[in-house]
Amino acid sequence: MTRSKSRQKSKRKPEGAGPPAGKSHLLVIEHPPGAEDLARQELTTLGKGRLRLLDTSEPAETGFVYSGTPNDLRHLRLSSALYQVFPFDIPRPKALLGHEHWQRLLGEIDALRRRQPPDTFQTFRIAAAGRFSSVFQRIKETLAADTGLQYDEDEADLQLRLRPARLVQSGWELLLRLTPRPLTSRSWRVYNYPGALNGVVAAAMIELSRPWGRERVLNLMCGSGTLLIERSLRGPAGLLAGLDLSAEALAGAQQNVSAAPLRQPVQLLQADACRTPFSAGSFHTILIDPPWGNLVGEANEPEALYPALWRESDRLATPGGQMLVITHQIKLWEQVAAQGEGWQFLASRQLFQGGLHPCIYHYRKPENS
Image (cartoon, rainbow, N blue to C red):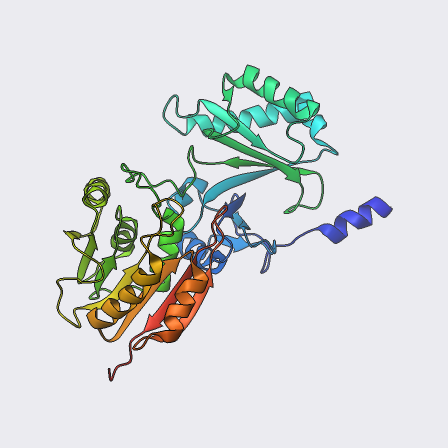
C-alpha cells in the first residue's frame, strides 16, 4: 500500500484537461537554460494545438504530450535536441535486459532507423548515471551486438538517455533522440569558424529582437554569418548586411550563406566594425557578436573595442532603433554600458550552453535622439 501511494504522489500531470485526442507521443526537447520560454513558445506555435506541456520544472528541458507526428518537430530552431520518451516499468536498469523489455527497445530503435536513409545511424551512445558500471557495459555490448552499431562515447549518431521516471509515475524512462545530430547542428554550416555562435543561441538572440518585415539589419563583426542566416530564416527584412575585418571569416560566411535556404540575399562587406562606411541612421537593428577571447586570440583588446562598438552602433541606428549584443565578458561590457551615451537599456538575459554562459543585452535608441 505504501508503495502505491508513493507512486501516485510522484505522478506528473499534463497542463490542462488531459492529453490531446488521437495517438499521443511522450516527447522531450532540450534547450539552453535561460531560453526556455522562447523554446516553449516556438514549440507551442509549431504544435498548433496538438500538444500539452508537462510541468517538469526543468530549466534545460521541456516534456510534452504530442498527438502529431514527432518528425514534424525536427526543424525546431530554439531547441538543442528532440527525444521521444519510452517508459519502462522496471525497478533498475539491469531489468532492461529482460527479453520483453529488450525486444521493445530494439523495436523502437529499428523503427527510428527505418525512418532515415540507410546508414544514417552507425554509432550509438548511452547517457545515464553510472553508465560506466558493469551493468551498463553489458547493455552497451548487447546493444552493439543486436543492432550492428558501434559505441562512441563522444559524438554518436544514435543518442539514448536512461533515467528514473520523471514524466510518468514510476519505473525508468528511455529517451531516444529522433535526429542523428542535435538540433543545434545547422545543415548550412559548411564552414566552421572558431568562436562561431551556437545556432540555438543565435536563434534566441534573433527572437529577442522581435523581427519585422521592413527592418534594415546590420551585423557588426559578423564572423561566419550565423546571426545573419538565422535572421533570414526567421522571416523577411528590408535589408540584411554583415561586415567583418577578417577576409577568412567573410569567405566562410559566404560559403554558409550559399548553403542556407535563405529567404533573401545577405550583403557581406569587409570593413572595420568601429569605422563603418555607412551613413548615420542607416539601420533599425544592429546585432553584435564581438570576440570573447577564448577561441579567437586575445579578444582583440576588448577594453578599446567595446566602447568603439557602442559609439559606432549608436551612430548607425535610426531613432527608435535597437541594438543587441551577446558577450561572455559581462563585467567589461556592463562597465562600457554604464559610461556610454545614447542607448537606453531594455533587458539582459544570460544563457547557459555547455561551459559557456554568454549574456545578451538589448538596448533602444530614444526617438528624439
